[in-house]
Length: 291
Ligand SMILES: NC(=O)c1ccc[n+]([C@@H]2O[C@H](COP(=O)([O-])OP(=O)(O)OC[C@H]3O[C@@H](n4cnc5c(N)ncnc54)[C@H](OP(=O)(O)O)[C@@H]3O)[C@@H](O)[C@H]2O)c1
Image (cartoon, rainbow, N blue to C red; front, side, top):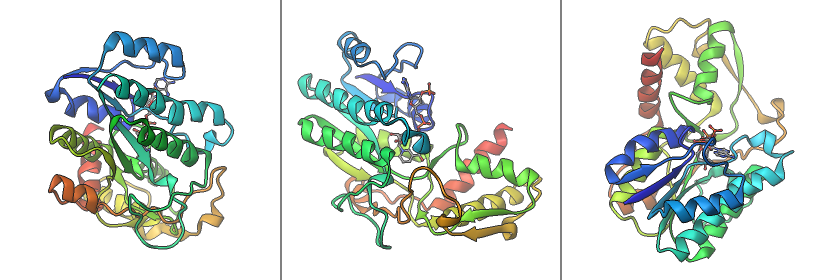
């Protein structure tokens, strides 16, 4: 199988570059080879690469910056997946794509289902939703994995920011009224690869660990596990104080409720997804070993 992977330098793409290789020949052009903002260059690349499977882990993920860069966010999050879906539909190829909890309106306290009404609160969320809808309407063979709060041992993410801050600060105020599931990039890559290998039926699936927490709860667990791993921190979990989102204003509005029901994917793959705490334990250990 001829696999085209986009976004190999990102959190999810980096992990996919490793996990996809047993499935076929992985061709993963970086930004220097293929600028995904350039529609014509992408079209030409597809014609010459002739992929059987496109795995798109590239996106405009700078949520706050997107508020002032709508055109660029639209190109990467909506136009690009639409372009891939159009190629896949016309060439009997398959498209695997990643979406976000930010497509949901964030109200209430029930976990969203794949069939739940969407209602993005930000440019990022709106453009991600446009990408999903373009794929769904294309007629192509596709898988969309909607995930949340991605982090990994590499890249810029909340886990690494918290560890860095806890080395110099003696206390931190952290948002406690946004609830979701922190998802390691490695889990996304593993489940995606399993799904491709097992020929999961076309459609949209939620993909996140089991359980839920707030950013405050996530940070406390990061500090607890770091201390358990003998990391020298200037503060512990007890010095992380909960604050409401209203005390931490950002350009883009965040959903308060990012809970996603993952039972559709679990049933389709006949697996039970791990809980977020054990995933954090693994990812944090991996990061600390690299230091
Ligand atoms: N991060 C989250 O919390 C989160 C939450 C829910 C869903 N998701 C979704 O999960 C997927 C993967 O996210 P991630 O966190 O792994 O993203 P990421 O770490 O920000 O990586 C984005 C990737 O896209 C590439 N890219 C961006 N613009 C490009 C361009 N013009 N030309 C070529 N490459 C370009 C980046 O390349 P460079 O390294 O060269 O910039 C990078 O490889 C995305 O679809 C995202 O929307 C993410």
